[in-house]
Image 1 (tube, helix red, strand yellow):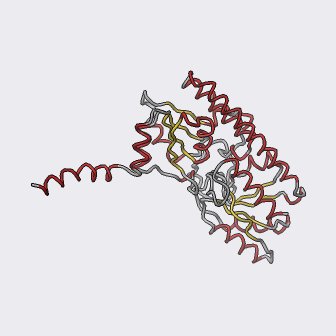
Image 2 (cartoon, helix red, strand yellow):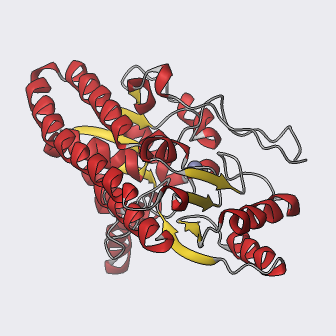
Image 3 (tube, helix red, strand yellow):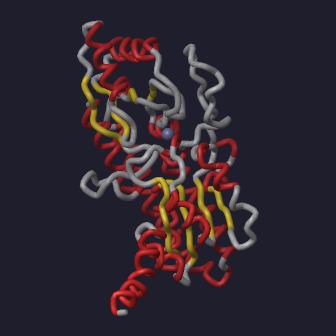
Length: 322
Ligand SMILES: [Zn+2]
C-alpha cells in the first residue's frame, strides 16, 4: 500500500521530467505574464532583450556557436514556439531550414510575428553573391539578398528601431517604455559603429582585406571599408571546391594578406585547407583567430552581447592584419 502511494506520488514528477527540457525554465516561460518571445538567433534574442528589458521573457533557439543556416528545430523549440506570444526572426532567408516550421505557427491567432530585416529599406540590402564555381545549382538554400545585415551596426539601429515600433503597437500601453529602451540602446549602437569604423581606419587601406569561410562579412566590409574574399557563398550549405581553396590562397599571396579568419559555429577544416593550399604556393598564411558573425560568442570571448561581439571582431581583425 505504501509502495503504491509512493509510486503514485512519483509518477507526475517522472512525467514532468520526461515531458520537458529545462523544466523550470520552460515552466517560467509558460507561466510568465510578460511577452513570451521565441527568438531565432542569439543576436535577435539580444536585440529583443535590449528593447523589451523586463517586459519580455525570451527563449533563444539558435544559440551561441550554432550555425543559423543549417539549424533544424528541436523538440524543445517546438514546445516554446507553441507557448510563444511573439516569434522573432532575423529574415532574408537566414533561417531557411526552419522557415516551414515557423510558418506552421503563423495561422495561430494568438501569435504575433516580426522579422527584423523588415526594419531595413531595400536600398540597404546587398544582393546575395552567387558561387561561381561548379557546385550543383539546385542547392540554393538562400534568398535574393545577403541576410547578414547586423554586421553593419548602422543597419542594426534600423532593425531595433523597427522592432521597438512593432512592440509599441503590440503593447500600446508600454510604447514609451520601449521607446526609452530604444533610445538608450541606439546610443550604444552608434558608439560601437563609430568604434568599429575608427579601428578599421587604423589599418592601412591595403591591409583591409578579409579572408573568411562563408560570405558573412559583405555588409561589414561595405560599412567599414574592407574587401572580403570567402570560400563559400552567403550560406554554409554545400561543398567547398578545390578551385575555391586555391583561389583564396592565390588571393592571399597576391594581396599579401597575413591571416584568414575562423568563424564561430563553423568547422575550421576548410580554413586549414586554405593554409595548406597557401603553403603549396610558398605563402605563409596564418589563422587570425575566430570571428563571431551569425551568433554571439561566450562571455570569456567577450562576445556575449551584440555590442561586445562587434568590438571583439574588429579588435581581432586589426591585431591579425596590422
Ligand atoms: Zn551566415
